[in-house]
Amino acid sequence: MWYNSRHYPDPTAGAAFARIGKEERRLNSGKEFENDWRRSVPPDVWYYRLRDSSATFYGGAQEGIRFAPDNICDCVLYRWPYLHLVELKTVAQSPASLSAMFGRFDPEKERYKKQKHLEDMDAAAAHPGVVASVVINYRGSSHTYAVSVGKVLSFLSAAIHGHGRKSIPESWCQEHGVLVPQQLLRVHYRYDVREMMTRTEGRAEDERPDQP
Image (tube, rainbow, N blue to C red; front, side):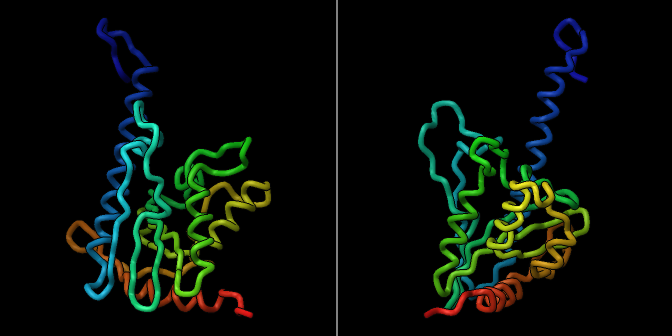
């Protein structure tokens, strides 16, 4: 409980500080996962981390910032002949709330805040040689999965139209994605990025429609 200057309980301020603390923990977990992922990339794979805008901190635009880059995904990986677009998500437990992963749901537009990013990734993946994946790390079970962005969009569509869940359970990732092997060092994890790339490339080719 937060107490004001007269030492009276102030639940409004207390709740605000609690939300800030929760958001900071979420951001720290996300950055830690992204850093571990970057350190796991093999030397023969080109890696580029798309830079965040300060307007995205704490979930929204900041005062005085009118225009900011809106990145299609978190990072890009390249190993001939495939270019990988990767969106990284880490969640405390299963199931993972859609709004926690993809931003607030707008009932008027009938879409999640970050859904446009996924749609852009899916459009890019329609081109030969491009693979687009959402990598979901469940910290509670210490399991990580790579799911094609097309399947994630189908899940979102079902949820939006009332035919599916509002959260992604780990069992769904087990069925529709590929397990990314990971190893715990002393504190941080290392992920088998090479294996993830190989398996998602194979799935992408299997799912790609035949070209006329």
